[in-house]
Amino acid sequence: MKQTLFKEVSYSLSKLIEDIEMGEIGLPDIQRPFVWTPTKVRDLFDSMYKGFPVGYLLFWANTLAEGSRQIGTDSKQKVPRLLIVDGQQRLTSLYSVLKGKPVMTEDFKPFSINIAFRPRDESFEVTDAAVRIDPEFIPDISQLWAGHASRNRFVKDFIAHLKENHPLTEEEEDDITEKIDALYDLQNYPFTAMELSYNVNEEQVADIFVRINSKGVTLKQADFILTLMSVFWDKGRADLEQFCRDSRKPTTNTASPFNYFIEPDPDQLLRVGIGLGFKRARLQHVYSLLRGKDLDTGLFSDERRLDQFKVLKESQDIVLNLQNWHEFMKVLIRAGYRSNVMITSQMALIYAYTMYLLGKDNFKVEPFELRDCIARWFFMTSLTGRYTASPEGAMEADLARLRNVKDAHAFCEVLNQIINDTFTEDYWNITLPNDLATSSARSPSLFAYYSALNLLDAKVLFSKMKVSELLDPAIKAKKSSTERHHLFPKNYLKMIGISDTKEINQIANFALVEWSDNIAITDTAPAEYLPKYIKRFTEPEISLMNYWHALPKDWERLEYPVFLEQRRKIIARVIRDGFAELSKGTDK
Figure 1 (cartoon, rainbow, N blue to C red):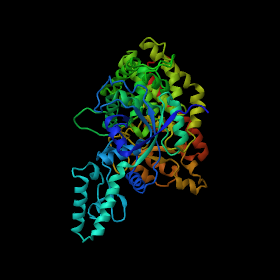
Figure 2 (figure 1 turned 45 degrees about the vertical axis):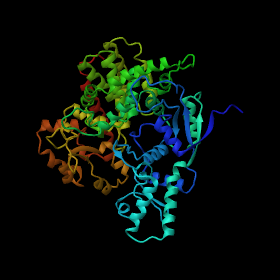
Figure 3 (figure 1 turned 135 degrees about the horizontal axis):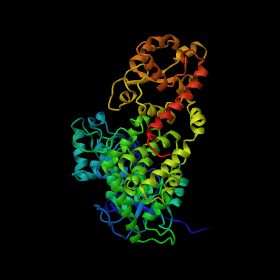
Figure 4 (figure 1 turned 90 degrees about the vertical axis):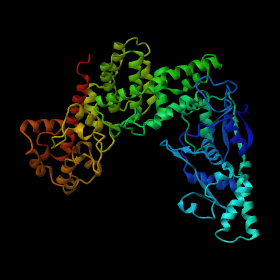
């Protein structure tokens, strides 16, 4: 048998909490997103109280545990000797309750975990209004460990309050005291931890995690790097998370990362920083570099780690620069996209931001040219799903194309060449029309069509209002300003024998109309409702409307399958024309 990669260590809960407090165990900051529900925390305490096992903990020995933090500051007294691989949610729950500290939700909102205990029947509940007014309950068990009163005083005060509502016998008082003592003694609850050797690499750790924990969230390479940041550059991780937190909150008079396209997560912005600083999309090797590993010799050093974290720090400063962030948002608008509703791939957006910063910071591309170049790039990657199947591999290949680039012209030339190699005649005439043969409401080709309408300054069908005006995310009402209207209404299609929902809801059967018009059209046949609406317009206006909305000649009288086939081809041409607007003046 090969040498084992771990050792088994026993802890009491109080020892775990103490080691976390001192920094011996690298539990990420209590203010980081916590994904457990209060009911899971309640069940955890209930199981522990009953003496049930609640699972092992999995720690990973920190290679450079004796080093000191050289970047940023931290209130912990030591560099973590152990990093948590599995058990973070349990330990965060226990640390939060025993120390009476709030956690942060996935939406970056502070949340106190309040668990109640009823000594009479030894039951745990998530605290609510009814529990708070019930004298039988200790409404917040955190007060037993983190409150100002001693355990004895706490018990006496609880019993005194209980006796105000009904008398207690001495036996009942003793029973209540014993049960509260049993709750208090949960701090001595035993845990078993498996501590992985520092010689184990991140791939092995991830494999071990998957093999022994089928219920946990799968570990990602970004998780390892964010954990390293917690250890060696906690301020950097805190800055990432504060930026993400602020992006979710509109402000009125201060600059913030809030926008209408994306509420980024820390791991997404981390990818941008790594792409900018290390020219890498695959995080595997970057993780090893940040640990201070020489990829040739396999040896670790503090000096190498500090050098690599310096690179990450410099790139992250650029990534989190608000001016850069909002200038990039203008790129998305330039590409015809108006809000997160139209973004089908956040990875395409994140990698486009990476390319934007590379062009701006590394290759010094002139701002006007850079905006159009990255707008074309984002349009292409979004429409084709370039970063859908294997995003890291595709981006790694794209970054590799830039490694020998020396100047602004060459940078744009490389991206334009990739775009041109993707948007072939076959793509426009065969692939794209076929992609449009779908009923998916979140199709990249559908939103590329809407983007093209914005780029072509198109007006909504049967309206004088522009598509871009009514897709403005700042306009919010009970009903959307625009609605997807069935050109061949679904009840009409059912009346003529077409009942398959996938056929009825084909992209090619939808057009953007104003809400009021959509209501008025109801289930009328297109040959009946169309004359009413075209009376609003002149012949030139009707011709332009038919072009924007890809309406075949005499479309209202066509057989439905023929209409769909013809319209898909015309929609593809409109998308191509919209993209051509982005390419005017570009060398091809």
